[in-house]
Each structure stands twice: as structure tokens, then as C-alpha cells.
Length: 350
Length: 77
Image 1 (cartoon, rainbow over the protein chains, first blue to last red):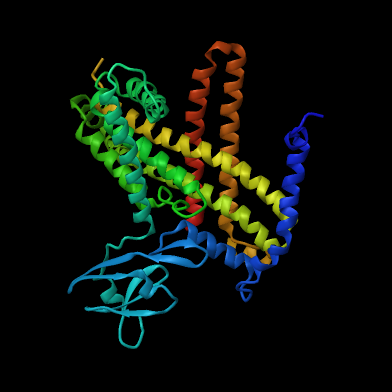
Image 2 (cartoon, chains in turn green, purple):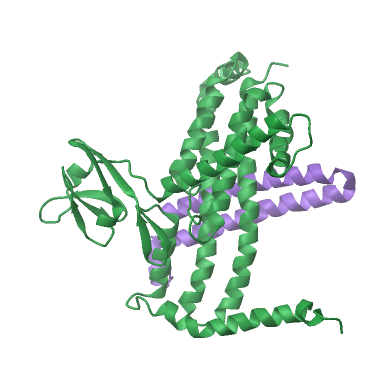
């Protein structure tokens, strides 16, 4: 036999994987021994909701977290402190203006005895840098680094073949231009290309970063309805501020004029329902994907045996592949529908 | 009324899970129809495969969006 044939055979790979799982068996006890006062399903539900939601501290690994600045705008002034001070359950931070406590991930004002003061809590506006904000900064810095370097490379290599990072991203950019912008927006596409490209890559990179399970990744930014609502509001403004006469005529002057009683409300609702649909589609797809993957992993903890883990891991790998497809697809669909709406607004009468 | 019926027949979980399941049936029927017609169209004209595939993916994402509205309402309600 030639050397290396054993190491390269498929059978050896399978043996290696099975050995890994069997070696991991003694460690399975440690995972469930933590907080055994609660039912595993309750703990799983808490862990999943904690992963999907936002939080004021940034978990690095296990229980260690990075304290993020909590920035509060109260009616008496601005307060800034590290989230490590209110991180543990029930700890109260006595700030310059009020005392604060974390209650179900929201900052509430407490009075001297520790009771939550709802009236004052409404006067406190929370502008903190939470986990989602940090994740958005990470994505923005990735986008800036990648695209600024590509644009400077393009300027230096005018007329030459693309090289390196340029050649990796050029098919995607050309895809957004040729398959999304030009067919849907028409000949005025160049004005909207920056917006469409930004939306596409922002959503794509956020979705992909959410799939990474360890430190700088693993957040759920596009699954936060505030973020998708912001994107939808941007599309709402762009579409309606760029609408030409033909677009508004189509909304306010229905074709047989006597249908205007029904058609005008319907058309006005449809101005708003299209961005709302964009918002909910992106939010629900990404959040549902995260919930499914986390639930399949939690199955291991709920059942408590090692023999569930091959089944669970296979399912999770399958779901991860689907989630990769969904990440790209949702970015594509959001950009495509935005281009379609913009196209409908700037379309000439023919 | 449905709540007491559920409690009477010892149904575990809540009725929202039933709603989400019905939404999944709707999504399944819709996307199944889309996929079936797309595959038939590819069989009739194999050279148009990439256009058909693109349109199938777009239509599937739209149908899935509607099903996910229902899931979101089930989660929140």
C-alpha cells in the first residue's frame, strides 16, 4: 500500500469523528450540572431568548463578559457608566441623578428602598452601547475596510484585470448591478446603486456574522425588529421622495374615477404595507433560523444523554447550511424588492 | 373557550403553537406548488433553467414571508 492511504481513506475519517464524540462523553455531565434547580426546558428557553435579544453586557466566553457603556439621557442630565455595575441580578447602581437597576434587560429607576419607580423610568432615555450596537459597529468597520480597500484598488488598477479581494467581490457587485438594479430600476439605476449595494452587503454581512458561534460573532442584529424597521423606513423615504408624477397619479387617481372611495385608502395602505412586509420578512426569517438552531442544540441538554448529540449535530449542520442559504437569500430578496419599489416610483409612463 | 377546551383535554403547550403549525402547512402547500410548477417548466424547456430557478426562489421567499408573519403573530400573541 502506498504511504498515506490509510490516513486518506474515508473510513478513517469516520473513525476519527466517532472517536471524537466518544471522547467527549465524560464531559457531558458537566454541562447539565450547572443550575440544576431549574427544569432544562426553562433554562433552554431562557438561554435562547437571551441569545436572540439584546443585552447591555457583551459575553466573551462562558460567563466572562465585557462591560459596555450604559449611556442614559435623564431629564436631569446624562449618565454614563459601565454595564458591569448593574450586571448581576438585582444589583443597583446609584448614579448622579437616580439609582438604576436592570429589570428584564431594561434599565429602570429604583428609589432608595429598591422598588422600581415606573414614572421616573419613563423619563430616562436609554442610548447605551448595547451588544447589538457593538455588533453593528463591527459590521460597519468590516464593510468600510473591505470596500474602501477595494475602491482604492480599482482606482490604482484602472483597465487591468481584478486581483485579490477585488476579484472576490466583483461578481457580487456586478450581480447586484446587473440582476437586481438594472432590470428593476431601469435606466436611472446609477443613482440608487450605492443604496442598493449598501443594503445588500449590510444585511448579508450581518446575517453571516450572526452565524458565527464564537466571540466577535453570534449576535442577532438583523433579527432585531428595530434594525429592520430602520431599513424599511429608509426604503419608505427613498421610494416616496423619488416618486414622480406618474407614481402619485397612480395612487390618487384610480383608473375608473368612481372607484376612488375604495382605491385611495387601499393604495395609501399599500404605501406603508410594502416596507412593513420587508421588515417582518427579514426579521422573522433570521430570528426563526436562530431559534431553530439553538433549540436543536438545546435538545442535547433537555434529553441529557450523549446519544442525542449525533442526531442533534447532524440536524444542526443541515440547518446551518439552510441558514447560510437564507442569509444570502434574504439579503437578495430585500434588495430586490427595494429595487422593485424604487423602479415603480421612478418609472416613466409608457 | 378554546383555552378551557385545551385545558380540559390536557393539551400541553399553548394554542399559539397550533397557529404556527397551521402557518407551516400553508407555507408547505405554497412552496410545494411553486417548486412543482418550476420543475415542470424546467422539464419542458431545460435551457431556461437559470431564469426559472431565479423566479422560483423569489416566489418562495415571498410565500415564506407570509407564513412567517403568522409565526411572528403566534410568538407575540
